[in-house]
Image: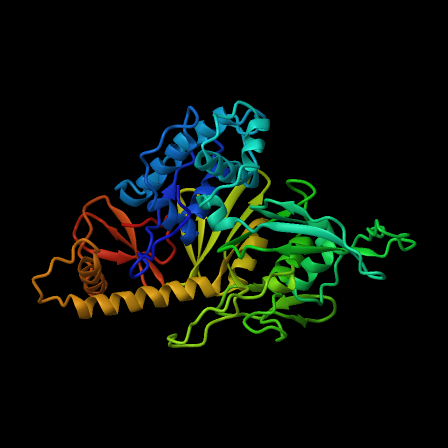
Length: 477
C-alpha cells in the first residue's frame, strides 16, 4: 500500500451518502468515523487509488471491510449504507472488548484502531491476536508511508531544554497519528491568546529538572518541554479529551468552540479572524466569517524549515505552508455522535447524523449555535493543510489544460486512458443537469448540491417536483 497519492483531475466531488443506524445497533460512533474518512480528501483519494489485490492479514480483514463501505459509498443506489462489515471487524479484532456489537463505543478509539490496523496491514505483520502485537507493529516503519502515516503522520519528538544552561535531554520520538488535548487543561489557559499559542502553552506548563548530565545540573526545575513535528501532515487530527462522556456545561462547550475558532488565520501575527466581543457583561460571542477556523501549526509546535518549493506559476498567492483549516469535527452528546464537514467546493457546512444529512450554510457561527442547541461537545477535529490542497488543485487544473491542448476534443487520439476527455464531458453534463434537472423516478428522494445551497426535490407520483423548505433527510442521487 503506497502512500503516494496521484493527482485527481478536476478533484472529483464525492457523493453525499447516509449511513444507517437501526434501533439497538448503537453504531453512530462508527458512522461518524466512516463519514470523516470519506470526506477527508487525502485519505479518500489514497484509499481509492490502492491496489486491493492483497493478502488478508487478519480474519476478518479490516482493510477489506473499509473497502466494501467505500465501494458502497461510491456506487450504492440505496443511499443508505450499512456499516455492518466494519462494525463486525472492529468487534472481532479488538481484544479489549471496546467495540461489542450492540453497545456504544468511543469514536476516537475506533479511528485510532482503524488507522493502526491499516498500518499493520501495510507493513505485513502477522495477524494481531491481542493489543500487544498490534502495538509492536507500530514500531515497524512503513516505507513508503502507509495510507495512515501519509495522511495523518507527524513524526513528533519531545525533548527537555534547560532555560539556564541550554542543556537538552535525549529526544523522545512519538509515532503520533492523533494529537490529544485535554479539555480541562485547555480551559485553564489564557483565553485571550490564539488557539495555536494555547496549545503551545499546554505542553510547556509543566517544569522539569535540568537535563545536563555532563556537569552539575541547574537547581530547581528550569527546563521546559520543546515539541517538534518533522513531517508536515496533510491532515492534522486533534482529539479534545473531556473528563466524562457527558456533563460538560454549555458555558464550557461554548468556551472550547471559541478557542478553536481563535486561530491566527491566513497571516502569521495577524489578528484572529474570530474574536470575542463584549455583550453586556461577561458574555462573549463569535464574529461571523465565511471561512472555517484555521490554525498556524508552526506556532503550536516547532517545525523544520519550509521546503524551497517553486510556486512561481501560481495564479494567486499561496497560503503559509503551516496553515491548516478545519474541515471536519466529530461531536457527541451523551451516547450519540454526529459529524460536521466543511466543503470548500460549495463553501458550506454539512451535518451528518446517521441517516440525516443537513446543509447548515457556510457560517461557523451556525455550527456553534447548532451544537449548543443540541448539547453536543466537540471531540475529534480534522485540519487540512491549505497549501497542499491549493497546490494540488492548481496542478490538476494545469495538467488538464495542457492535456486538452495536446489532445483536442476533435482529435482522433484516444485519451480515454487518462480520463481527461471523459471528465471534461462529465463536468459539462453536470452544468446542464443543474440548469434543467430531469424528474426523478417515483418514490425517489435525493438532493442536488448547488454552490450556495442544498435543495431537496421530491416526486409525488404526478411528475411535479416541489421544494421542501425544511427537509427531514438529505441524501445524494
